[in-house]
Amino acid sequence: MKLGYLPLVLHLAPAKTSGIEVCPNRTKFCTAVCLNLAGRGGMGVTRVMTSEERARVNEIQQARLNRTLMFRRDPDLFYELLERDIRAAIDAARTLRFVGTKCGKPIFEPRTPDDPELSVCVRLNGTSDIVWERERPQIFERFPNVIFYDYTKVPNRFDRPPNYFLTYSWNEQKVALDRSGSYFAHRVNTAVVFSTARGERLPSAWGPKGRGRRPVIDGDEYDMRFLDPEGVYVGLRAKGWARDPEVADGFTVWLGGEAENPPLALADFDGGDLFADLDDAFGHIDWTKGG
Ligand code: SF4
Image (cartoon, rainbow, N blue to C red; front, side, top):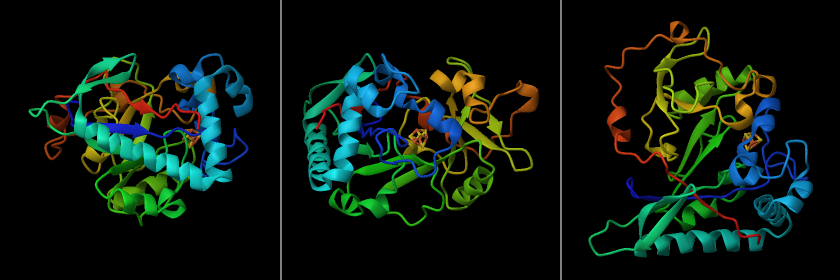
């Protein structure tokens, strides 16, 4: 793997689709455009179905529902399986090397002595927004050499373990302005979904009206947000339902052309080189075991 990381993403049934709320600060529009229905997880399902209805027609949705129910009904087993999978990834990282991707999934071969060892990084909130540092602080202590990272809409998550990194998620609510500002003051970036189409360039700088502008980095080039420079907006291209103005109005930032977003001088911004060598087809391991 070019960056030397083996990423794991835990997907739960988002919002309250399982009957259990796992996104305490979700908004109307983020719930509507949630990536839970992207890719194979969206095959045969609709936005208005409950998790149970989705689980009947889509095994990925079934696995997410099972995990979410286990998370609340049998937390001992949930955390046992979660830790087992992280340990398995740590073992795999010692013995495997990344050779490429197929259908968005990484492919590994046995590692030779010349290959660098991979580092495991974990996103616990692939499709949820649980405050894990309060919910299960032990997980960060048990794996001190694993980097955990998430996007969040929950405000004021400033007191976190040193191996847990966050990126605030911009959204249509007015409070996002102040929350984003508070997070920037605590060295946490903000991710923004732009209407920019796949293959097109994101704006080089952006800022909400009345607030300062900051550089925008291309957040689609890879997912390991803990590698991002500080003080930037992480630009993401709208995908799926986020491209539909009727569904995502207010959530996606609709760009009106470069005149509205003139480039900012980037003389002091040195994050660009970090991304020069990245693989566009980067994928994730998905916990698809039903549990
Ligand atoms: S908070 Fe995140 S995971 Fe939850 S519904 Fe919104 S976009 Fe989906």
